[in-house]
Amino acid sequence: MDAVKSQYEAYPYPARDPAEEDKRLVTGSPSSIAEIDHYLFAGRRDWSQPFRVLVAGGGTGDGLIMIAQQLADVGCPAEITYLDLSEASRAIAEARAKRRGLSNIRFETASLLDAKDYGPFDYIDCCGVLHHLPDPDAGFAALKLALAPGGGIGIMVYGTVGRSGVYDAQAMLRALRKEDEPAKSQVETAKHLLKALPDSNQFRRNPFLSDHTDNDAGLFDLLLHSQDRAYLVPEIYEALGKAGLSLVSFVAPMNYDTDFLVSDAKLKARLTRLSRPEREAFAELLTGNLRKHVFYCVPEDPPERVAQFGEDMIPVLHDLDLDTIVKSIAGGKPIKGRREGLKIEVPMPPLAAEVLPLCDGKRSFEEIRQMMEPLPGRDTFYDQMRHAYRGLNGLNMMLLRQGAE
Ligand SMILES: C[S@@+](CC[C@H](N)C(=O)[O-])C[C@H]1O[C@@H](n2cnc3c(N)ncnc32)[C@H](O)[C@@H]1O
Image (cartoon, rainbow, N blue to C red; front, top):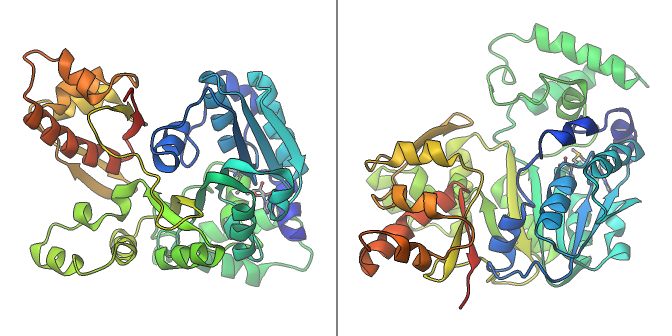
């Protein structure tokens, strides 16, 4: 624990300048409130009610600032607790909150292993932290203990397959390290090693590992971490099982969905024989590009928390460039792109190009249908919307919220 604490004192991560808060809000997964509502509260969360949040291992504040700002924007009387061991990281997170005038956060310097003492919480964010604990299972268990009834957790841990090359480079740097070598000197050695890597090296052959390229904190976190493990999908299920937690969903779901990822009929037929966790494990090995696993989990089994498609549900567009998508799908073309090297081609039904611009996060599917001219038939509209929703939700571009019932 001491080595991890001193690393984050020397290199608060990720490196952030509070002045940047004037220009942009860093967003991501987990912990956007639209995702939390969709995956943990069936789209029914009433943000006018109090909401207790723990950001466990809050670091320099990315997840913290995002959730605190989003809750402030919807007028939620939220109490957000930031926990981290690193005082240097906390100072940056506090400065960012101050710059934004956020007053809904209490800052604590402590271990997440003691999270229960600060709770209970309706939602816990733990992004990029558990894989750095000496005993990650103790971390999963501690978070579960800090949950309020009905609460849930959003987690990010490293993915083994997508990080191929990282652990080879870490092992070489451990071999080269002098006793008690200061962090800055280790960073210098790492820079030498990176220049010396031949093209055949596994780290060089993994083009998606770029965290180290723009700053020393990123380089230290990637290659010199004293405590760092990664997870395969089955290991996530195992860790959750030990803690008495159940997986609600990985995000983005498409990354783990062999229906999207495999088109070969013979393979598809074989895959239907596998359980959901087995198919997700298959997907990870197939794509090879998941450097991180983001997922939501809860203490009950089966977890019936995800919002379900329906006429009175409100489609919430999320993390998408509407103009570009609408342009590309007009005329029935698929959504095309690349995600970390993976070619994406998600077909969209004809009505999607008309419907997406009408999604304002307030209107339900049925209210949108009623606005359209000519009025599409109910069956046609919902067949197409179900299809569009599945594709867009798979890409984490559409979430659901309950409208008036
Ligand atoms: C990679 S950073 C992630 C920060 C932040 N969650 C984010 O996503 O930007 C990991 C953080 O976990 C903190 N950490 C490590 N072990 C911890 C523990 N046992 N309790 C609380 N924080 C811890 C470190 O100090 C560091 O700030």
